[in-house]
Image 1 (cartoon, rainbow, N blue to C red):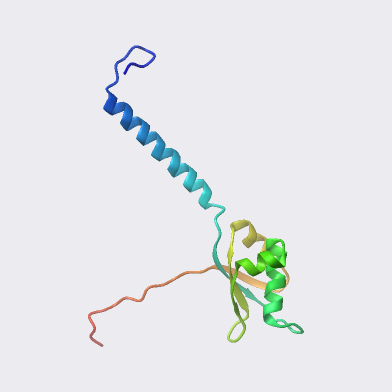
Image 2: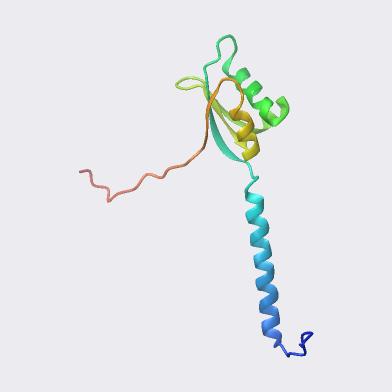
Length: 123
């Protein structure tokens, strides 16, 4: 294979460069898509006074995601005993919007922690 300048490029290098360019393009596309991907967040709220907690959670969530139907789709769980709040799959834009809603105290990404397994002996 020959390029425009008349330099001969072996076919194996051409294939390598094509695959390398393609992988870089895919990586960049995936990296840019991650910034708007929805992830699970815990939304801590004030305890609602004259309303059922789940109704309050749905109403608060609907204000950030656009509708009650959309809120029902992203709502994962309502917390109403030890704490008041809910977990939902939210995009970064929705996190910002829900943080502005009345009664919302904090929005935090959900994290999963693994316990260390020891040798099985108690100390």
